[in-house]
Image (cartoon, rainbow, N blue to C red; front, top):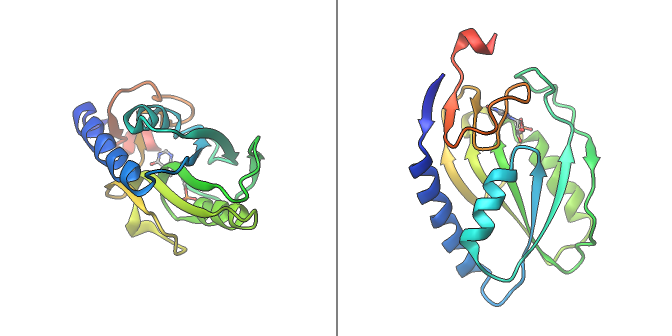
Length: 173
Ligand code: IMP
């Protein structure tokens, strides 16, 4: 396992993303939707850096399970507790990989007529995209490879790491 993004690098970038979002949503009360489980650490740091009037809710989609490749099938396993019609919604994702999850989420949420819908993702593996999705606030564009830490898991492990690491082939197998 090799460190890809240090705790310091993440903290600096989260602070920058927060100031962009705070500026763009001035005078508004955005609803941040964390996509479970991978985004919970990012979301909790982001809202404390945002330090503005906001609300938080969560959604969960079917995950990779213990495998490291996507089946391409996305299902909603936990829906929101609140209605989003007329709200300024920001989806908060850990990683955008093929884009299939995000594309499904955007379509689902768009149908509920939010006033605006934006995406904030900590990591973007843009080279692996299979469907076009717009990431409005992106933390880091990263190389291909399986990453863990800062809330992101491999078979439910490594979420507690304060940094982001890339798993080398031996563990990946
Ligand atoms: P997509 O639908 O292919 O864009 O996949 C997005 C989801 O797959 C992310 O929200 C993660 O939960 C998971 N994922 C993608 N790449 C990784 C990775 O490198 N490590 C852990 N989870 C990942």
